[in-house]
Length: 291
Image (cartoon, rainbow, N blue to C red):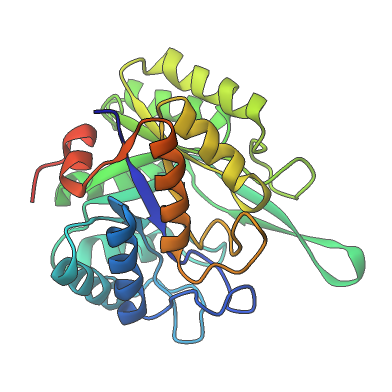
């Protein structure tokens, strides 16, 4: 049967002013993960948050969230390497090293990410998330030490070039799968590939040309979430959906849970003759050991 991996992104940097249901605490994230597992997700992607919703790099937050999720589900767990400009790579490496039971996977941004976000009185503020070659190298070494599978994330062809360079340099095995990420649309301030059908087919053709045996999970943000997910489902690829990427459903109403997005993906996948992969299926498809 044609299986589809559905990855739920539970919180990211989403604020509760956009949707009050966004989980921030480990207990809230674990409850949300359980709902997503029941809806058909195989993987959950989580970001540590402070009690006030700020970005956190606390190993104890990740350890507690992982423990609670594993106690209730068999989901694959996926942390992040994203950090704000004022954070050092050592803060990321610390939580990768110090969680007692290593996470299954970590999303590995493979280039610098630049946002020109709305600011006061019609101006924009540039926010750059750093990912130097040396930052990536250090992250990969920790992943190797701890048995964490890096998930190369590509947001444009320059990122894909970096993945090829890392493989060429022997720092990264030829990837079995990649995360292919898109912005919402042209003009939204994100200096990454816009979430259009043309972008999707171009980027995934490049992935297939470089790594013909790899599969990919694709996602958009905001305006492009359902466009990219629909294309991925229809073309035999895999999808990421959830609060990190969008706060509202297709009809514009607030989602009550990331599980609502997972349920949508399951419904569309089944219309294409595809069934959601279990966590065990996903482990086999992505080359991770069974647990």
